[in-house]
Each structure stands twice: as structure tokens, then as C-alpha cells.
Length: 361
Image 1 (cartoon, rainbow, N blue to C red):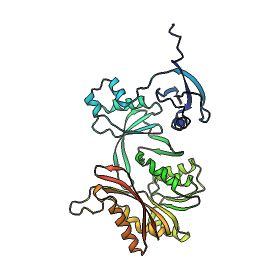
Image 2: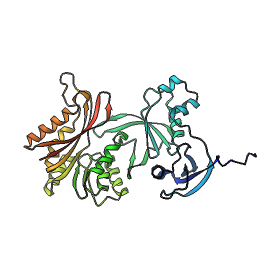
Image 3: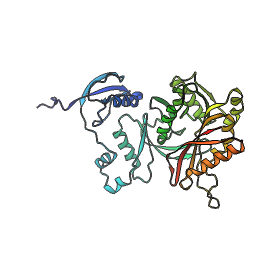
Image 4: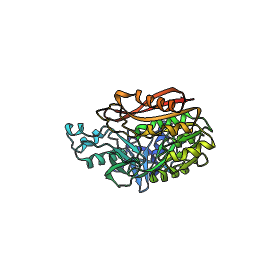
């Protein structure tokens, strides 16, 4: 066999898609059952990638179907690091989880040796990605992320698609928690068309967008100027500008005017701020979100539903957020019926991100 001759097994199909659409295309191909995850995604041109498939797709949009030499995928980060000469002990210290958000890989690098090599390995593992960011936490009143580029071209702006909702963001300037994915999708499934909703801490549209795409009318409030800019962009990107009413303000300033026009069927309180509880009082507030409960209740119609997020020490889940909600409701002479409680993810060691859903009469 000559060097130019390739077997049928070597010649395998791929579809060429624009790099910015690669994540959308992969999700669509997975839904069609055609994505071949045994082969690597490879760069095709400067602005496109070749995504391996088992057959030409019928529903997924693509530029062309091509044949390429089928390079078998190294299936795990461990595989890639081992190929780079890492020892088992070094691999044990490597990250165990990360998230691909559009063209960016977001990873907690921890105590891993040689972060740049980890970043290069993640780019090799995820051919659709162009930048790897190590995240080092979130701080400040606007919950701004601290990140570091460890591999790739360094572009931190991306568009991430999740359950059909598109989120434009700059991961060096605004936070995006991959662990909240199920909660974002759940909110889109929970609302009814034409519900009147107040999202008190909208961010870039985490919950606003899936609710608006489900047909709800959402007043979205965000005071961080960068997050607000992406909120407005995302409203347009998802074609929900007729159903979302964005305000750059403190939500407490918006509530009086909002309530005067009609109170909400649903209020979302997605903000929380956590720190360790003070030793002298295990129930001392490690977050400030509960301080907005009076405004949330002012905005909520009798019989409406409140979704309250909180970062709670494990020992106080779910007692503390429920007690806070009941105390605020009692002060407003209102009754609370807890509908559901959920642990969304581990916020930090010994602290859980939880949600309480409650109907308030």
C-alpha cells in the first residue's frame, strides 16, 4: 500500500462548522445520535473545525461533509498528560473536572503541577476550544471572577449554548457557574407563558433568558454594568426583547415602581454571597441575599412563588433559609408554604448552594 493510499477505516466522515457554532453543532449532532466521540475535533480552517460524525446529519447545520484521516481520540485528560510524560502521582494532582463554555475551558487548577501543560492537554482534548482559563475565585460586591489564561489564544469572550439558550459573556469579567446548569433549565420548564416575573439579580440573564424563552414576561434587574451589558446583548441574541424588561439598578429601587404596575407571579432571588460563619454565632449570616427579602415580598403577589437561593453551611441546610423566609413573611403579615428545596451544588467546603421554592399568601 502506498503512503497516499488509505483504508476505509482511515477515511471517516466529519462535518465542517464555524468555530463559534461548534458547541451548538456538537449538541445537535449528539441529539441526532451522529456525533463520533471516539475521534478528535480538529481545526479545518482558521475559522472552522471538523467535527467527527458517523453519518451525514439531517438536522444539524454545517458547511460541508468531508473525509479526514480518523485520528483516534485520547479519551481522558489523564491520557493526554500521560502522553506528555506525567507520572501517576502528578496525574493524581491534576484537575478532575472542568467546563467547556463555548470556546473557553474553565478549570479549577488547584495544586496541579505545570498548569500550562494541563491547559495544552485540555485544548487537545476539546478541539472546539481556543482558550483555557484557570479560575481562582469570585470576589467583590459585583461577584467578579479572578481568572488566569493558562493556554490558547487568550480570548475570554465567548458564546455558550445551554438547552437552546445562548449566553454571550466575558469570563474574565462576569461569573458563570457550570454547576447551575440544571437549575437554569428547570426555571425555563417551571414557568407558564405570560407569567409576570421579577428577576432581582439577573446577571447576564442566567434565569431570565430560559424563563423568557418559555414565554414569561420578565423584569430583569442588574446593577453590575458589565453584566448588564451582556444581559442586554443576550436578550437580543435569544430574540426575547419583547418579553424582557432590563433595568440597570439596585433591585430595591425598582420594586416600588414595579409593584405599582402589578405584582409578580414569581420572584427569583438568584444572588448569594458566602463566607465562613462567625464562631460566636453559628447562625450569623454568611451571605446578604436574605436582606432583600422585604423587597421580594413587596413585589410578590398573594399566592405567588418565590425562589430563594442561599449559600448555607451544611449543618444549617435547609433550616436557615426557611427560617429567614418565614421570619420576613411574618414581619410582612404573610404566610409561607414551602413547595420544594434543592441542593444545587457544593459552593465550597462545608457550604452548599441551595434553593427554597415557596408560595407566599
